[in-house]
Picture 1: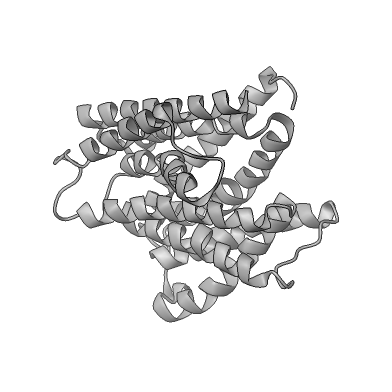
Picture 2: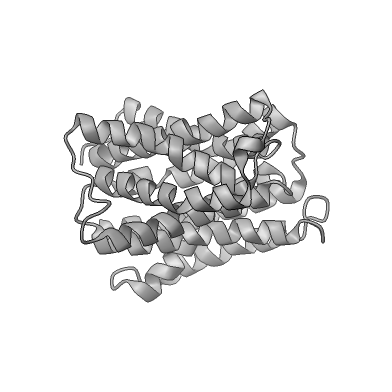
Length: 295
């Protein structure tokens, strides 16, 4: 891996902004669309740039190969379930809370990695980071101005969505020898297949007369926050490696909080700022432990 240059840091920041912008766009999409429809449109539009790239680079898509069940399982756990859960939760909570709750993914992945991989065991620094990060989330749930009896379950569902990402990442290790573009294209195809009957029977989106802003947001979520963001992530991984790319975890909740205020004027309380700080500190210590191990 090469030494990061200015362009690499710019691309990392762009990736963080794209992923962070997903949260307020999900909120806008919920004004017109149900959570199943949002999930379907995200994977449908997200598949377009990925499949075009695979065609351009002559990368074979193995969605219906002998490993089809892995692609189907990962497509459900890593795309269908979290996209639905996040959209369902964001309908009742502020999008900046979703950005902070979803930022626990590196912490959750460290916990699961300890139990399901051989080389990702806890040490003192990791344990300290996990405790700090999750303490921030617990503290966030005490903010009665933003989380109350009416939306408490919604906040928990967003956390469950972040856990689905982690489980999907662990399952992806089973097919880690395959090209990233092939894996992403294949799981997107299976996510579309799974969601077509669900969206048809549950929400019938063809009966909806959506607002223009919701339509723009849901297309953006698919093309940019899902499809283009994954391709940009591949580029950063290939050029600079996983450790450099993982720094995006610090930026997403920060940018998500800022963008939600700019575009939706969402409330930022003192507890939100304290929780955000704790989560970022927790991620820092977990990443620091990983950096030391690699060095």
